[in-house]
Image: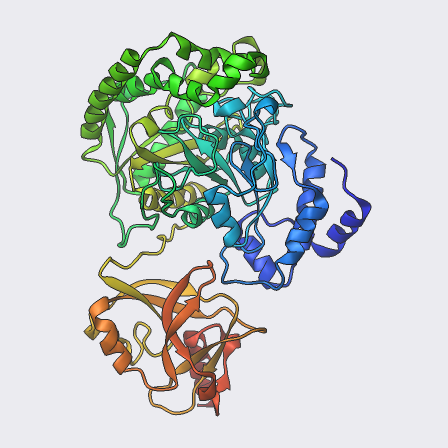
Length: 609
């Protein structure tokens, strides 16, 4: 791919380093970098990478720049404002072709997939459709009629499938996140092979509307990102009940509402661990478990035989017929249009009957009951993401066995209605990426995000802050920015009303902060600004919903409760000030918060004394 000289000039003038996390990108925008500069830098990086296998369709550069310009001024209230992302080519994006890796299957959707539409509403910009194992059938990334994407860390290693292009483009730092799909591990195996995060949500949490299915009963859109927080934030934006999707479920993606005790973790016992001769992979997994133990985790080996039995059913059982149902017409009408390996794998369905299907359903129910019992005493499972590494040469020699082996710790997850999160850990001794996968019960997505973020920080030697707690169902989150903060004069009002501290936060950088006239006690006023705003420190408290009226009665003018935009793009109810109440007030926005202002005053008083 070559870059237009004019675009190259824009890049040189606009941005030296391309931000590749959501936080970095929002900070760049808050500092005045434009979406055009980011998009130009993105295109330049793609040109430098020069991998024709990543995208099946890359949107025209002028269209992307026009979309970036159309965003206008930075809007911190939109959580993904100006964030470019890539989309696996079995997920619809209006105006782009959807081929599922097969030209003869190509369609031209006029509307976005449900999840893509939600991302666009949040301000994100899709840049193109990424390569995949054809019809999302494979875990290697080489079952494509297009050039095979090169693994971002070692071109000799397979990129992983089926969401190969999406994982590779994130691993290269081109986009902060990309969408994949996951039926048998396609959102996790490529993440492990490219050293990034892969999040597979609970089935139904993210609508599959507008997705070419592999197995409709088992599919979910997945997210690739550089860190756990980004993957979880993107998934939370996409998640939302879609009444038009028969398999959608109204599930919350929020982290747990309270500090978590040391986890009780189940791992495969010695007989259940399979590395197919890769001793370094075994050593890497053992080292990660030791890291978890040092963090206080209670780790217990369990019989993993039933999980392996479930995994075996995915491609040896009647679910292959579900894949066949998607492309049956094409298989009969134009079989040569389908990749030979894909045709061989899915073609086995012709030998199956309805009797086989029901026997499989009954067998799965028996195994699921056993697996549920094995997990009952634990918070989640931890497994190797992949049992071993395979090269492109290995796949050329044997296109079936390596693919089957890569699904050892992934194939059973959707069949058992579990959620999963693949996270990078310390590199192996040979430099290849280390990775483990956390697996939880349906709906435990928030818990896994919390634990996954802690683990990645622990591996990196960084103290792990807990992810923000959430109010309970009968509580309401309230943001305070002054005398109601912990330890300050009016905090007792919150405590008397049954309030409890959740976490610290900051506003989006669009507020003015003022020390109001009057008192005691001294009070600040938070006011939304159209320009020249700052990010202001807050505390988020949970208050019983029945106490909100009593709190309102205690708030004097010009203060009141309103919606406050946070720096992560979300909103919370909190203390705001009427602009008319700023007469005689001192602008203290530069202190970044009430405690900073108070500390400055105390230092001044001490100096004068």
